[in-house]
Image (cartoon, rainbow, N blue to C red; front, side, top):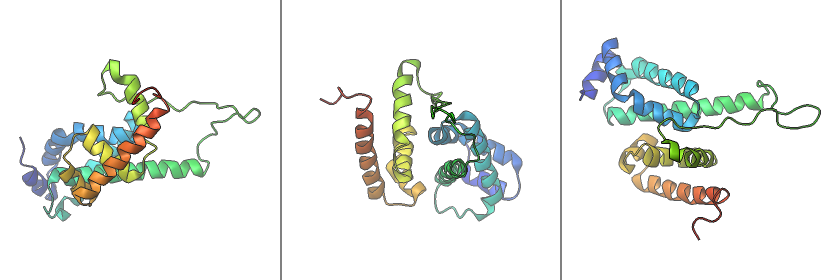
Length: 193
């Protein structure tokens, strides 16, 4: 177990070994959170690096008003959502090649199937559909759902990460679950009867 607060103090003084220690302590969990948003391991690795660069560059500004893990998760969620927005903006501007054939209008490329590496083989198909359904949620519902249900964080910590009350997170989570039920009924119409 590391002393997270001391790590941040050391990082604020430019200690790269402390950053490495913090990365080893949080890296896998933060990567999984980012991956839940981006659904691409290369993109998630890129954003993970950006998260810890931000930690290194802003450690001296950390006020210790929240836990270090809350602060890092907040950075990770914001960076993930920023990455998605940026990627979507580029798509809207037509930077990426068209996914449709010009003459027939047929789809050239299907969206890649996302398979979270932490999901067991027998649950991969269900997880793939769940992550597709999660994409349909609002940013706040996605964040509440991913952090509580996928990452297993307590609602109080998620409230701190999101800058909301615990009751607001609970409400977002209820709406997310209701919306997911509706979305997943498309794939599993016989369930829930």
